[in-house]
Amino acid sequence: MIRIAIDAMGGDFGPEPIVAGVVEALKEVSFSAILVGDSNALKHLIPSKFQKFVHFVEASEVISMSDSATDALKRKDSSIYIAIEMLRNKEVDAVVSAGHSGATMSLATLRVGRIKGIARPAIATLMPNTSDSTTLVLDVGANVDCKAENLFQFAVMGESYAKEILNRKSPRVGLLSNGEEKSKGNEVTKEAFGMLSRMKSFVGNAEGNQVFDGSVDVVVCDGFIGNILLKTSEGVADAIGKIIKKHAKKSPLAIAGSVLMKRVFKVLKKQVSYDEYGGAPLLGVNGCVIVSHGKSNPKAIKNAIFQAVNFSHSHINKLIEEELNKFKTLSDE
Image (cartoon, rainbow, N blue to C red):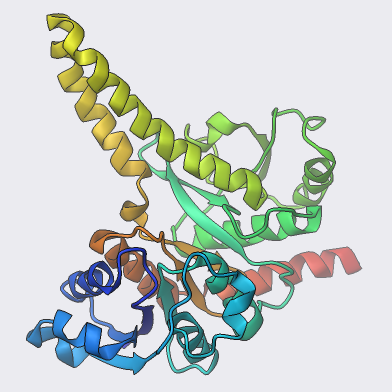
């Protein structure tokens, strides 16, 4: 049975929504849940029929959002530190945390370690597209500044994830840029273009609209751009819904049309909402770490756990290492 350590204390709203999400997940899949935190605050939240699937590991501290990510290395009694140490020691198969994302990434990278050949792990997330599917985007926040080599490694990881987890036989990989032409982009993306061209799956530069039109399966960018893309898409869906609501009262025709449009944008908002996907895998770490939004509700935590289960059942990290070795062999020839 898959063992998942859950940072039960790290979310913005305390342990209640996190534990509720664990319970919802247990209703649908079998796994062993290890809740890391203050057991006195957690035990009463578990219904009796699920208690046999839940274990508790004590943690006396919580890394708050105001703390520095580097402080996490010193706070060895914190819930996220203990959860990551359990993964490092092979006591669990995965970690799910809605706590301080910087702390989670730093601890995972430094304590669990990276896959051989990966310089920097990346956060990957799914974005909806018009082909009734999703587009994998990475990095969306782990690395603000990247070298071309990092973007190439993100592409290899993204392609591997699309094959192994998303079941895309021939994923198309695009490099996010300000134009489709090879000459477009900054110095880093231009250099990365040449490196990515060695990949059979690489289809060239991808413009922002291609994240949503289904023309590519994987979009590669640095974490600065990726995070802006992610937050902007969430904001656009929310803003359009509010604009429709604001103008719906101006005329009977607008009222009639707004009913349908509100339904449409409600679906759109749902698709770009973080709770639909639950969290983002930290690819490149030598283990399974799912980074969830601090404001995660029970549904988001449930879906993050589903991601952790699927990841743990896969061979994604082995595939990433094998793919990197292929390109290393080609460069040595």
